[in-house]
Length: 252
Length: 257
Image (tube, rainbow over all chains, first blue to last red; front, side, top):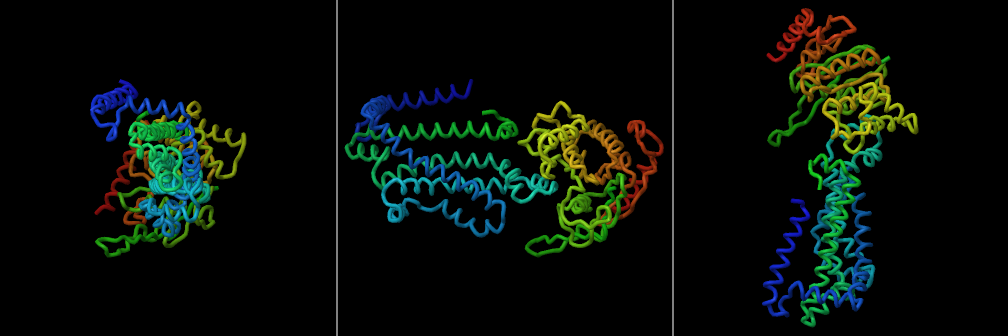
């Protein structure tokens, strides 16, 4: 059976069960798929959802994109050079565990309540998994491949670009995937704690009105968005690192 | 030209055994020479330091003491005068066979059409004309090692250094590769220093065999088989081969006691 068929069956069973049992729950305490779908249609028709999505995605794309642009080179350099690892490694490890929510008030003082602070929160949440994965990936590059570069008298910079970077690509892509989930969470957190806006605003406003079905719409949209991004990254990975799937013996 | 001299090479490591640092001598005043155009095998029991000696000759590891000379000039670090063939080929998995051969040439500064043509010529030399666009995972172990040899030869080194080049291959492929190496040597006249743990291989291929034990030279044995070696299969069954192999076996066995 093809994988997507199994996934579809799984989804149908879950949504079916939710629809069946969800209807018995007080609509304040819970909701069910058909009610959420109706709320979804309503939000789309009023243009609210499209506007909110656009408003949310702007800081998301900027923060997440910057995290990739900064995190990958940083991880490469930390993993490759012992001195840099000794100097910066602890901050990255600590940063990964940083309770970012607690720092949001401070970030607001620095960056205000608008776009910049939201992008910054997304950036900080997604930077560390990308950086750490890249770092670990560099450490996992077989020494023998580095020796190939050295045997042909390649400079450190050339070894980094021509050997370490491609060998680390699968780890980098895994880090970028892991960061999707964190970036989505960061985006909503930012919308809760700064200017209430975007999808986060729909969640808060509908929750305050006990409109649980509407509250679920942005949550489902975000989860679907994360799945979509994840598959997109998987597709990119197969394009940029096709040898990896072959070596691992599975073609997704 | 392409002679290699290892002169008084020492190599010590510091190991922590149960928290106590211990100095271990991997190589102890190791000296031997490889003459221009010669094939020399480096053989000895596991842990005798033969791979370390080869890596020092290549410049991949620094010696704690002593000198490596290529054509009489002292060397530090790697250089295009030496080409390295690794035990497991160590091709870059994201590059095709041709691109792997091109890699070394690019590092050396070659560009453009000449780059591609030269790489293709060396793939032809190792019999992989039609596999240029395959990636390493699409090549058998023997084919991978052929690419490894082509990559090392392409930069036109004076000396080819090989670390158990056929050790990971099955017996039949190994024999084919041995014959091909003899053939390549006859055509290119490269000086070759290779590490092996295979007695037959040492006798079949080498002009001289350096027997190592505990990080130094135990014995250097001449292999009195004529060159060109030609038909290796016939050679394997010949009396001089059996006699030489037995002498080498005794020399190595003497080291383990």
